[in-house]
Length: 166
Image (tube, rainbow, N blue to C red; front, side):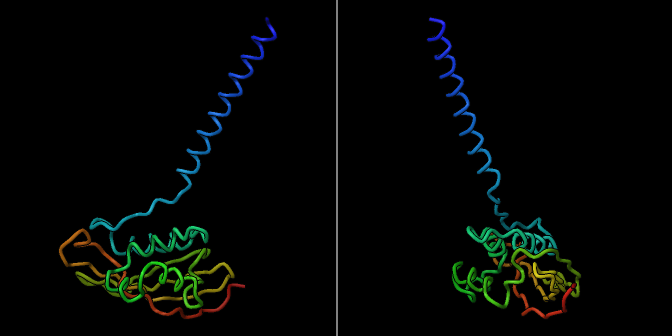
């Protein structure tokens, strides 16, 4: 009888361990998925660009969450110009912008500001240790709707190579 009880307890512990393992996997997968930040009027112009750059810096090539994050803060006119999200993903993965993906570091400097428009110089160090510079422009969305008064990206220049850090 003791052997049966012992085996029964073993089955209980085994089942508890399975439940704990499954709980851990669910918890881990929920917490590792990047949460997409949505535009809102409280996010300042420089923070919009930081959100976009941090998304691109941490982009997962399987899910493209970083590119999707960048898309969230693209002005609707830019979204129309680039086409739907799959086109935008292809554009960012293309030769002109791929240096933004999983870059090592970035820094911004404001070059222009007004009540409804800011322009920044953005320097990035890409994963191949090459420096690039961009002009990044954000504008306040003034039309009615959920984006009213949100700062959104209206333009990103072609990259200018600044050389290598090696």
